[in-house]
Amino acid sequence: MKKWMLNVVTATVLTLSSSLPVLAETAWWLEPGILVEADEAVTPPGAAGQPLTVTTANNSLSTAKGLKAGGEPADGVIVTGMKSWYVVAADDGPGYIRIGSTGPLLIEDAIAVPGNDSVPGVWSRKSVAPQKGARLVETSMISVTDLARIRKVRRGFIRLSTDSTTPVAYRISFVSELPESRVGSAYGPGSAASQYILALANGGPLNDLYRATRTRYTKEQAMGLREKLFGKTGTPSLFFRVHEKDPSVDPNLTEGMPVQHIILSDDQSRQWAFVIRCEQRDGLWVVADARKDPDLTEQEVAAIVRRDREASGNFRSGETAGPGSAPAAKPPAATRRRGK
Image 1 (cartoon, rainbow, N blue to C red):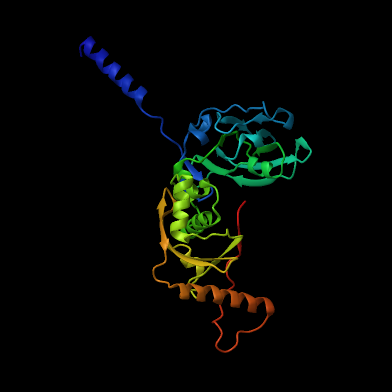
Image 2: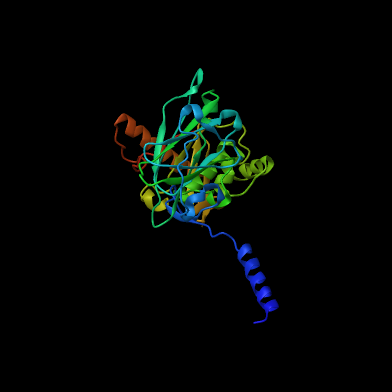
């Protein structure tokens, strides 16, 4: 081969190799229990098997590293006997903590003790580890800043540790919102449908609607959608109650059906029936469409609500239903209070 041809071939190979994307790692996403392609926010530098050097810069409360919503992720490498500390500010807003790890981790978080923002309160804990042959484990949780703001303290704390004697690499990110591929219900269409209809019923944050649908609604669009399904309700409801359309059907079966039938009643003796169609995307369930149930009349919906109220009353008093009473039903779902 002539020299100039060899130079052209070499340059072409170098160009192609430099433009090839870095292959994403497979992660075991803990919450829905599925294998996913890990993104940058949860992929530590040591995920591809590079040599790992243990990091000790933030191994105590006094050296805790600050995380900011939307800021750069933090990387670390730990072994058994070590702890990595992080601190988040309540004023930094709501969001999610996302963590990816090459090995087992114990993840702990706590808010500051009221009156002393430098001391953590009671810790909550969860353990994670890669599964199903994945190189990484991925997990996400609502940032402790939400609770800190509710409890009127200024800081929250996150602490990571491992029982592995082999170095474990991790990456922790504080994000304002999850990527779209991580938005939806990991618990089935029943959970997605309930989250959606109660978000509309309560007139809750627009983020609640987004998390149930992957659709960004404006306030005006959400209000229009609510009026379409609930009508002009006037006085706001203080709480809602969910009813089963057919109490004889096993709820474990109905919860997994893509088409959900939901009946609501409120504290003002109003009731509604809906048909909600869900779809599975990226292993999660989201709401694709919702409308009033065309197969139930107002009288039939009222009868279902009355049936559950009578069954609940009989259950509390210990009385049995007399002749002509509504048939016995399983205790209805717990009352849902209006979100603040």
